[in-house]
Length: 507
Image 1 (tube, one colour):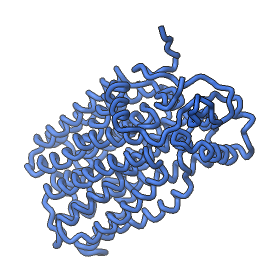
Image 2: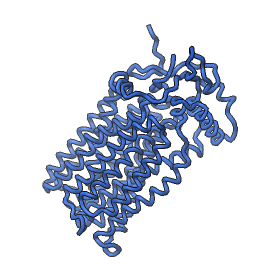
Image 3: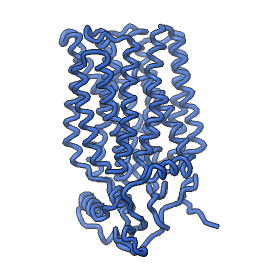
Image 4: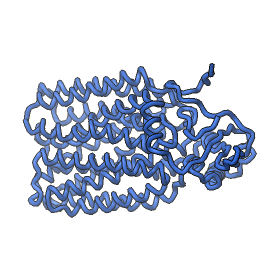
C-alpha cells in the first residue's frame, strides 16, 4: 500500500518527487530519453529571502490591476456622464450591458490567452495583451455610438482578461512560498489604487466648468491608455518563469535566470547552496494536450475545481454587480450629481486596498482555509444587513458609502483569495488555463449577468428589488465560505510542487 507524504494535497495529488543528488537541470539518462532532467529550480526560488527583485515584480505586475481598477472605476463613475452625453445618451440598461460587454471580453480573452500562456510562456503574453488593452482603451475614447462603445469595451476586457492568467501564474512561480499568499493578495488588491486614480480622474474630468458633457469621459479613457504606456516599460523587469522554462524544454535558460535572480537577491553566486536543496525529476514537454488538462481538472483535481469555481462565481457576482452600479445607486437613490461620484469612490477604494494590505499576511500565518472562510462569510453577512438598511431607507449617501467601505474591507481579500486559490492549487502545466477557465466561468455566471441584472433592478426604482439582488449576492458569499471551510486546501508556506505536483514529474 502506498504511503502518502505528510505534505500531499488533500484530494490525492501526489507530493513532490524525492531529493536527487544530480546537479541542477542536468539531463538524466532514461533509456533513449534525453528529455528527462533533475532540477532544484523550484527549491532555489523558494529558498530566497524577499529582495528588491521581488519588489520590482510586485510593482510591474501590480500595475496591471491598477489598470483594471482604473477601467472598472471609470465605467462606474462615468455612467452618469454617458447618460448625459449628447452623442451616446445611455440608459441604465445600456450602462449595464456595456459593462457586461467588458466582462464578456475579459472572459473570452482569459480563455484564449490562458491557453496561449501555457503553450508559449508567461512573458510573451504580457506584451500581446498589453498592446490589445492600449489600442482598445484609446479607441473607447473615440466612441461614436452605444454599439461602438460596447465593442471597444469588449476588446479592452479581452486584453485585461488575458493579463489575469499570465500574471497570476507568474506571481505564483517567482515569489517564495512563505510570501506567496500576502504577495498575491496585495498585487490583486492594487486594483483599488487604480480605482482611486479613476475616481480622482472622474472628479476632475467630469467637472462641468472644465470639460463639456461629451469630452470629460473621453479624456478619462485616454488617461488609461497613457498609464498603459508606463506598464510597457515596467514589464521589461520581469523574466520568463523558470518553472515554465524547465518543463517546456529550456532548462539551461531557466538555470541562467534563477542564477541571475540569486545574484540580484544575495549579491553573490549560490551554486554551493543550491547543491544542498532538494531536486525533482521531470520529463520535459512542448505542451500539454487539452485532454490531459480536462482529465487533470475534472478527475484528478475535481474537488479543488469545485472549490475554485464556487469562490470565483460568488466573488464575481458580489463585486461586479455592486461596483458597476455603484454610481447609479448614488445618483438615482441619493441624488448625488454625476460629477461628484468620484468623492464617494475614494473612501470605498481605500477600504478595498486596506483589506488585502492588512489581512493578507494572515493568509500565510493563520492559513488559507481559515481566512477564506472568514472573509467570505463576513462579507456576505454584512452585505445582507446593509442591504436591509438600504431597503428601509435609513441610510444616506455618506452612511451607505461607509457601510460599503467596511464590507469590502473583507470582500477585497476574499476576492483576491479566489485568484490565489485557483492559481496555486493546480499543476504548473495547466495553471494559466485553469485560472482562465475558473475566471471565465465565474465571471460568465456571476460577473456578466450581475451588472445587467442590477441595471434592470435599478431601472425599477424599487429599493426592495435592489435589496433582493444584494441578498442573492450575500447568499453566494456565505455558501462559498461554507465550501471553503470544508474543502479548501491548506497551501500556506508550501512549495507549489508539494501543493500540486507537476504532471511532468517522474517517480
